[in-house]
Image (cartoon, rainbow, N blue to C red; front, side, top):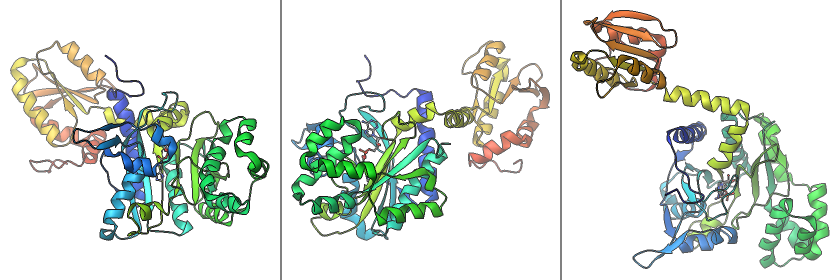
Length: 432
Ligand code: HAM
């Protein structure tokens, strides 16, 4: 039996890579003052049917539950967030700045960059209409990419404005009920043959192509780029009116992040959705809103393909997975003392492992190497002294067992590791 197509098993190394991504997402969010939230994995089908737009609705995992309700696994977070905010916004100071790392489910054709489940960092600002909020949000997106070691040579955020297209369609006397269809054609125009796009745009084709090729003016977008320039982030952005986003609820500035080489699908995407909360609250809450989401799949591919970013990830993962101490039990009659020491070290926040059953000393050292332990401590014939061996240098010392803790604490790498873990010694901290 295998995992279903488009679903992943996360073996420990995959989990470590996932945690690395989650940690950067969380760290940057907190630097910007965002608070973490979550919602239910399963929602009423109707929430997505009404709010997500045709493309996502086709991809829903939906079924009827045992209570006869039509439900769906979440394909995106924005409708859930809007529902939560519509119900509870009075309890929160505005602007609401929230982030989340939900797992999403979309029945897509599995391919490079697209699976049937993915983790998706979501970051949203609710209750702020100023373009400064758009600047702040795009800056979060860029700073997250920077946190992975990616530069303006590796990634670009293409920004656009749906209002620009709304003004255009109004000027062309296009009926409002056709707007969404035109926007979807523009959204796909980059990936589709020009003739096909022209055919679907009909009488609008010439005017649309002129804008796509020559660009158009937007004071709002100029202001946003200026805001990012003030922060030294302008190299990461490009105004590009081809970006309109596939989802129906966007109303204003929209953006998508891509790898510069153009080899991968979008890394992230988002924008303003100023009417969604109003619609979901049946008019009782009217709050401008904006946000974006970044999936772990394309981002993971980009990190693996980028030398600096993958080196950074591997170094962090190796550090996070490293064991501090492996206790080698050479004489079974020392097991009681050894285990007491293991407990004491773990209480102090060290990462410690030891053999659960009797094993040859050579095999225990191999395990210590395999677990990338910094130090092995051997309990054997030397008792009441123990042998402390630094595995990297092979340097060995005999230490009276009652001094072991103080010696390890005095060792700079090990003491800083325990401090970082934030665990206070439960039996006093005089040695630290
Ligand atoms: P989205 O563009 O549909 O936006 O998805 C955002 C990101 O999620 C994509 O750029 C991509 O990295 C990732 N993603 C989407 N589908 C898949 C898939 N099948 N497999 C792997 N990765 C995928 C939204 O979902 C909006 N709700 C974002 C948003 C938040 N807008 C405002 N706030």
